[in-house]
Length: 561
Image (cartoon, rainbow, N blue to C red; front, side):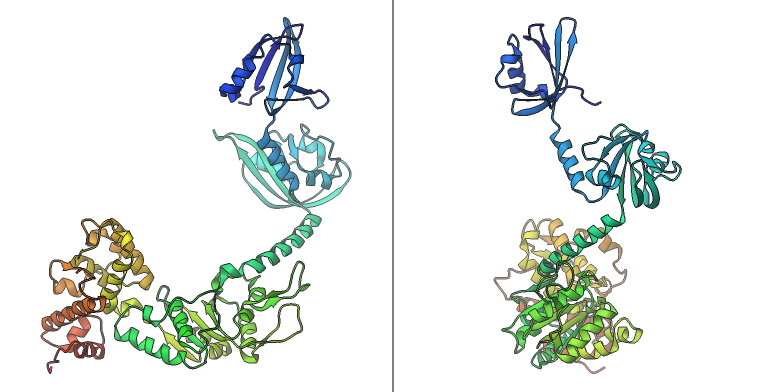
């Protein structure tokens, strides 16, 4: 219910305050209540702290501003004070600043508020009040087509309603309107809001949006591209599996050659770690490494972000260096390069072919010497064949392809990865992890790991948070993870010891601990399979050649089959 007054002062015929009443929560303020009660017996005109402005119908008092009305009662005068609504005036000011035509209506179609843009559109003086008039008193429109009347009739939104009509001031209007009903807390209709745009408003907004676009273009580099200290090297890649080590060796050899490299790997497999490692291992290690997330670029901004702009290229543009130019003499990492449009791929191809670029709006060619490392989470060759990536761009980017093996193809790296996470992120667990149950290892080996190492670390963080008594058990996994685990596993057929101890890392080094664990898994599986290399390799999801490599690595003599 709307409050009619905040403070009521009952005065005698002589102007003395006889009584004070409160009509709102303002009276709950003990300080205000005391000041008001001290007025009783005083002549209101002699209260110096109360300044009346009759021409505006306002009074300033208690460091507040009130509107007021007074009327005669049988025993004197009643003065009703209503505190100025700061929130309402601020909201009105915001609406007046909008270039859109914003209008507020009550449920019966009477006008509650027109912002300045509305009055300007209609040719109405800003001083003229239209509140209280009906919509049909202002607009010559078909009631069955009117956006606002449709909203109030159907109690639902109206989108992009085109209308051509006349105002009562004689102006021909063409607008596109959005209309929205407004409901009370009990679900009853309170009124409706309309937001209209005409051609002049649209043109004005396009100009402003271009200026905003230029500002964002200038500053979005920090979000979408990072020139940073490179933190990762090949030493940060965890895993002793043949698959991973072969990939690392290939990457090291290619890093020393100044050629473009395409890294191919599933989400979460470590593509940026490889990219940074290659840069660190190359002759350009002392130059900039610029990482660009191509998938994060809005299509409308990608060209100016990569190539830069000159002042006057478009409204609001300025001289701005592009990301390719920023990486000059260093390494440009194009993450998820396959997300680029075909048109953008063609422009990138020209830079790679000519080793020059033009900023947008410039006729000047700028030479660039940049090594491009790109990445994709799909098969780049297949994409080059089905049109998702230009073939000529594929040939330029993929002087060599480094394919990162997914975690499911190198499950022998699980112990190293698990112990690395436990040792480096102890804050996830309530107490140090000392034991890992066979069921825990079994679930890890059964999972397909579509999110690769990133998913593994997420699962480990979750499990450590739920762990009790320093033990990781399969009950600590999230439900969705358990739901998708395989039913069959090597460990179900050949049970491991009841509990795997996690020795104190200060007693033995991580590599030594992992090697011991890996050796025990290999030896027990090899024995369980009757020392048959082919069967044992299959049980551990390894190739025969890889299994033999591990036998030699741990000095286990291979029995002839």
